[in-house]
Image (tube, rainbow, N blue to C red; front, side):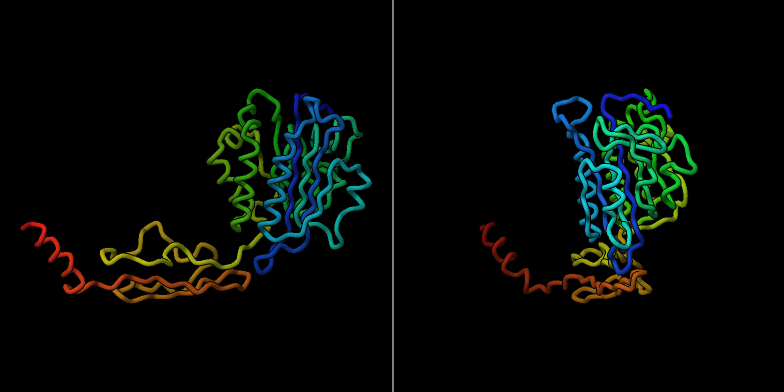
Length: 293
């Protein structure tokens, strides 16, 4: 297989298991390439921001993580946590549709060395140039990958690849399906999606995390002059509510319950300040009158 040359080439894969009760089932499995000579231009610390994003995401969704730096194929195969991995991250070197490296001068490691997953994000120049047996696409139910990322057409996408990946992770962390997370990231970074440099394959309905129920921004205190819910406010940030109470009266409160598909609930309430009677304002009125003399 022909590899497309690039001064510095990153490969990143992520996969996730289905969440239960706001927690990921299984473990995080994070692989990062390492330079034998850290001063070389091709093998630099540019891999590390991707690795750090993966670790932060694993922590956010509550997934125990195993981290490998510069492993060989046997280490990868023998280090998968018992019960498999729900979240797999691989920041490698010179990734193609079916293999990658973990150091600049190591041998090629086949994509199939990675554990099977629900979702695979394969970051590299040609990770989606081919699909079928032995490719990254064959190891996951859904895959986000790249086509000809080293080409001039994809240069802007390459330069924005880290925030693009981060935006996908943000969507997944909010409980979105991978298709929605990918599309939302594409709205922010059209240079990746509109050009076809980043592509989504497999099942777009794969969902790897369900956050626990949480109240929306309607659960707050309102001033006396406010009379209705804001049109862009929501009852629940995560989950949904069967209750839709009216806007609270002055000095009163209303409540509702947000229920998530994992069974978690959140008790929510909105209150409105009480109207002040004339005696409340008398000191101000009297003071204003004295100042006029």
